[in-house]
Length: 167
Image (cartoon, rainbow, N blue to C red; front, side, top):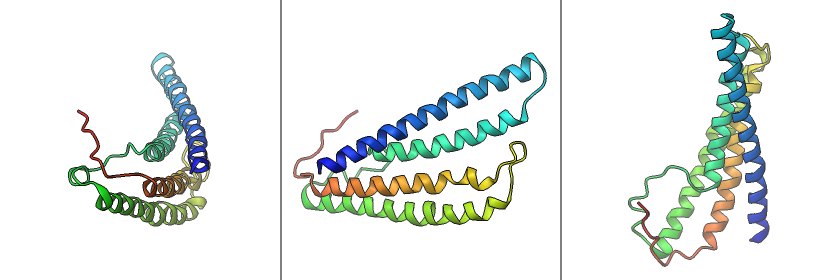
């Protein structure tokens, strides 16, 4: 169990660094875009496109990061009312559903769209669109990994007491 927690912590740390790098890049690119547009009156189409793709990558990887932290959005009205074995089964089923969704929609579908768009190039950067779409299966794979780790954690968690409500 400790090895899984250490692995998860390592993945989260690397993912956090990637997200920070992407956010810093977005800030620099956005600043460059503002300077070229308003001070030199020559907007940069490359920076505009790069900013859009960087934001896309950052949001997808941040979603995986939040999922790994178990801070993802969920409606817990019923789930927070139950305890014990039913709670454990419900939490486990939620992780299985998330795993299936990430596998089918994000990884399988993401790989299909990535392959399909490898022949298309972006307007300004002239790189294959498949590289842009590669963030979808990559983040889906991370969500699948976190889902398995969360499911293992659920199996080792005692749900006999109600969680304290936070406001």
